[in-house]
Length: 284
Image (cartoon, rainbow, N blue to C red; front, side, top):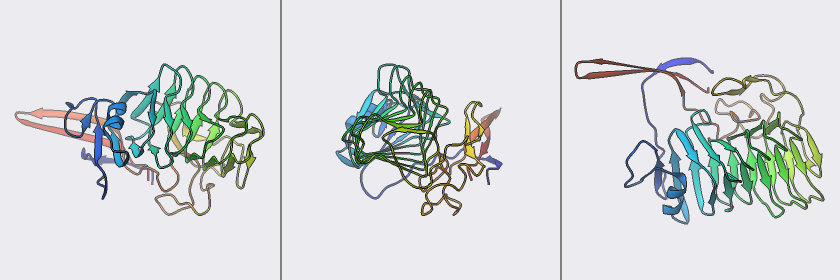
């Protein structure tokens, strides 16, 4: 588990029974199912059923997801979405799903969650809140790391109802990890790590202790957890890919990415033969 191994370069694009898989790749010519930007791929997608697979790179945010689609990154280590103008991603559809990204905002909020599922993402370094949950939200935050944001990690507006946060670490932020302004009737957190304040509904299994990430300050950060604070401390009926009880944070739960992350790449040329040797770090 969590070992280094030599691997061949292998690009895996999931296939689905329904809908179209659209690929966002800044290094590929536009055409067919290929797009240079996430917003363009969203615009081209059907109202429901499509999947957008985003290849590694830095991408512009400030886009809204109002369709029942899945937007899938290539891991927070290599797939970064940022914005210089307010909210980076706004989720507006109950069946929308965003996963496997590093999300930040240089001017405001990382994610505004009206509806939908935000899962297995890193929301880090936003100017204000990592995640904003509006009053009428029914959205879900699951197995995310919300870290080092300027104000609250996850903030609920006054009267927030219907939203929930599960298996999520909201820590090292400028203010409280989870906070609701006033009179919430259903902003519930379960099996989360971080401080709480205001009118958050605190459910079962919550903690407020340093998650002790393997290395938060490396580039990219290593968000594995190995202590009793967050390891095997998630919701008991959710499981990690290795069959153990879910960890809190990015490397936990049923949507945890299991693909290896490239650490070192060496290329050699011998005549007309090009050899590429890659060292990757497996998540499990």
